[in-house]
Image (cartoon, rainbow, N blue to C red; front, side):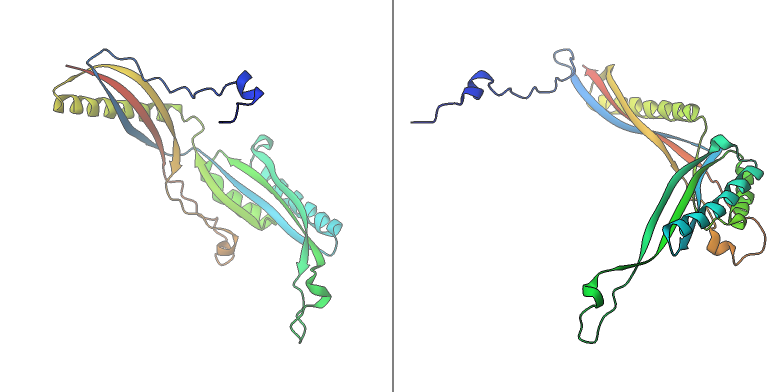
Length: 246
């Protein structure tokens, strides 16, 4: 005899998963889905990068004190370089122990059963900087390193107002989708009756840039670090559904 359903299943029978409804089209017509990509390029007018200080000390307090003193100089250098307070934001602040590697004994075992010993502390403090005058970026980075920043990472280039470039990419994507739909329709002996639906996703990606960090700068003369902004490619991918009619 098969087992009886539980009381719970009798009260709440499992629901069937609803199928996603297909777009409604006229009987005898055909639904065509096209994926198309549009793009546009622009020179960036904004960049962001991280600058910070790493220090060490015998105690956590000593490491943090040394870091704070050095970071204060870095922040002052940013202000002197013309970077507004609103364009500087702390992105990382931490203090962590530094461990010594366990000492191996002649018999192959480790001293203190391999337990790591704290031999000091490391403090890190970094800020994210938004650079609005790209022509001054090399000078600003040079000033940061001179002031004591020993970590500089970036930059990430972007557009302060990307919508116009994105709209240009959207127009191109739709033009390509429509042209491709017309091609398929002709090949099938049909015509494009209407657009049923449109969806999109998009963004931008930087082209390769040149950037020199502190290690490379130390071997150079006093010239500012060279930075090439290149171009940004704005891309939009559209998914367009067309109704094809005889």
